[in-house]
Length: 256
Image 1 (cartoon, rainbow, N blue to C red):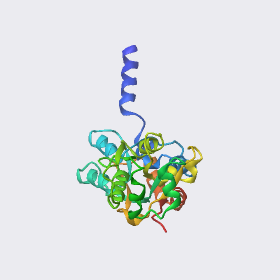
Image 2 (spheres, helix red, strand yellow; image 1 turned 45 degrees about the vertical axis):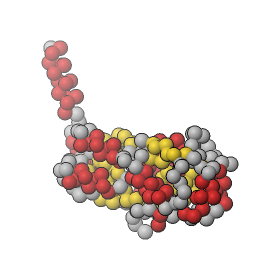
Image 3 (cartoon, rainbow, N blue to C red; image 1 turned 90 degrees about the horizontal axis):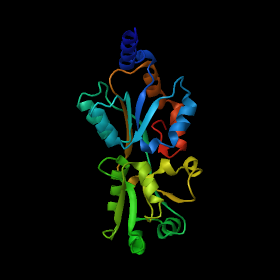
Image 4 (spheres, rainbow, N blue to C red; image 1 turned 30 degrees about the vertical axis):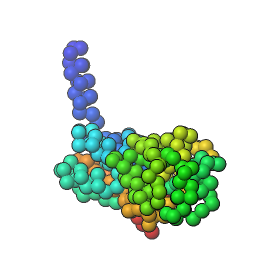
């Protein structure tokens, strides 16, 4: 009898609930960490999606290696397109929002003073360069916001002496930027939005003009056949309600 019960339990463990009722397991770029609870408050699903935050590159790698995510909400198009090209996903990627970058620093630091006092054109950095020795940003090898930050910095002059602390993802880059061990950093605007700052120490933030880097196009893709709840979440991300929330929290809506 015990063997029969154990066999039934193992069968349920392996098969899980029916696909139609399955709660989606979602891989989400860490730049959405702050806005995600706001999205879920508006969405109000019967069952909250199970979420793993990380850099887009690392999440895509986990999916290729067999991680059972049903959706990837990437911070760019390259990783979702890679999954589609590899045959991991049977539906082409869809853009759901665009990202923005920001300088961030603790108050009364050289970078904070610069952010508050100058136009911050490329020629302004050399004036303060000797006072800025280390900056934090997400690792460009895995994180789209890191690649965009690298593009921004490439336009400035006399920055060869600056060292960089690379976060595994955008959220960790913000942590490093505000740790005191760095002079500040370049992070997603969404992580230092008005909503986010309510939970952060006092900081100085300066949005970076979008013309200083390639567009940060967030793209999502379904992995295999979506459950009903997965489809509903996918559709919600494109809804006017979700787009308004994105727009208020450091992103550029795709529905202007």
